[in-house]
Image (cartoon, rainbow, N blue to C red; front, side, top):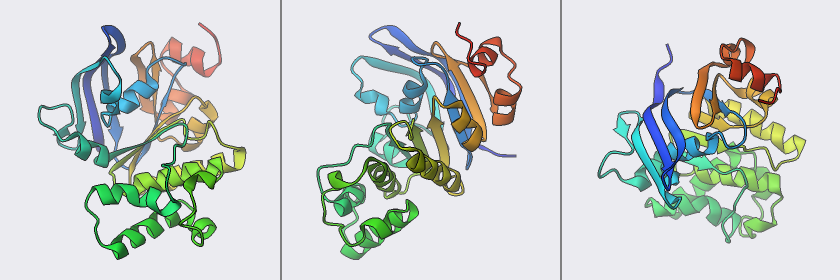
Length: 252
């Protein structure tokens, strides 16, 4: 039986006293892909940001409840937020490369976490660029500005940057929404490959994508989890009327 890598218990989020997430209770199984789906504004991205405390950067955001990553309650008093974000990486919807070279983009995180050996840095950069299929495309121009890469390449570079700090969990916020079909296909294949070594959480508005890549699906509406389970159950035989309507494209 697959164990939960992340366990969310009675998570609530408010923005300047306005509710954003309401009593979220859900688990993310280890080494599987969990897709979070639901209409715009339902809280998908907010939940994703709560998993690595990027929500802390939103003015007025207040979180209560527990998020357990392994045995660590990431919202417990005294928790090192930097350590949380190392364990749970977040790849944003729009790729944002740092204003530096391709090499330094990937090396940035390891430098922060104390990688001092030039050889170790180079080996890490090469390994992560190979994993994301970029190495052969950029190995002769590692000193070039990362901003010169195509959008698809930039998205893969951001993934390589996330992998370089050796996280346990990878969270993707609509990772293919800004990409052409070929780049989107590559990212989907990579996500399926990554679950061999990582727990993967993907926010997506694309039901077909969820069907292709997800082992588990969480359906959200108005800041609440309406239904959660295996992809076959939630997408193939939804139990809740709201889930059925969403999957069938019926507006409420």
